[in-house]
Length: 596
Image (cartoon, rainbow, N blue to C red; front, side):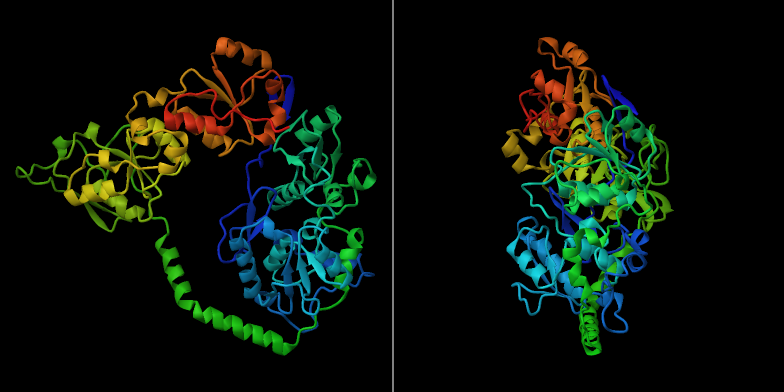
């Protein structure tokens, strides 16, 4: 628990955990409020089976009167064909996700024996994939007893490999649209929910319009917890903030609790093992369609299985190639890296005096012991080997064939650096630089930021070539921010740009507190973990000194409200990144704008 002036706030150890992973051919891109959030169908993704494996028994025991259809009218459907007989029409999502994402959804549905139609056909459609209940096509689908579900339901069904009625509120379209979300004025924190449950809660909060914070402070309107215990619960009681369970959020999402929202009630104070499971009676108009089975013949299943096997055979060569690539990508034993003091290692050259003498004009040939992962003995080929203290200490970034490049570097007599701070050169595998954390740190710490071609050409010439013509380019950023990367790298004292300046980063800054802190510290700045009081900040910044700098995002606007009211400057992360790229601190650049 930390203190912020007169406000305490309790940090959340899961605040920076995210469910987002890169989409592959077996994944669905699920839209959140700001961007598409890809959820994988299996593997490294959120694993929902552990939580929902007993969903069918829950429905059977608690909803015997509903007689919901949990399976097809056939003996067995393989999990890879779990969508056989399902015909989907996609509504609402077209304006919120990319065309590529929609194509990915369609492809995954087809891979599991389902079908997607471009036009709503009452005679064929069985499932309407929609986000809310406001569209005319939704009204028609409900009248015709079509199953209306969201992309989250589809994702979870594919994870389970078995058809089932919705079991969480996030599986059903909301009764409100984007313009009248019921919790748009709430700042909500969460306690007790871990891993996948926490991810679901955060998605639900986005859907109802609430602002989520990983910490709990006096600015928070509400605390949603799984158990009535912990530091956040204690502070909520002390500050007289409502504390509710997951049922409350489910009812808001289903439209059963509408503004003015009710927080008190027995059902909101029971803390269940499965707090996200919903009662079908809360959305009976959406569950009526599940009373009707989807009849699928044995011939249809066999046909779907044959088509799937044909598609798999067609892709077999590509799949075998992928497997080979995966085996080739297994991490080799770690290569030796530059330590705090260079010492003799099997893969790094020692001082020149320790090298065997060679004929004049020929490159020194030093055979080093074989190192596993480098395919044989390493030999220094550099015919103009610099003194040890002047040899390049190189950090690699975005390198595909990393093992090969490391070998070439070591054969030239260079060192491998672990971090930007100890590196003299950053070598990037791409010609046009991107503003990665490693790149931004290198701008402050490294003498050169070069393309991979420098190592390749140097190895071919058996000596380190002059670096000037290999400096990476970033024309788009140079045009927008009106600077030259080459000129920036020629400026002295880049490690001291932020010397004497203290920063406070609000919890939701992008690219994240940890990374932004590293970038600032590489440029000589200091980052404090808790914000100073308004009086202290005024004292540090009097007479326009700007010695205390606050970096914030819109999501954390409540934490800097007092500064904005006093018309004190608050910046976004672009201030840090832009200042480093230009090597110039401009307090008028990237000022935070309070949209409220």
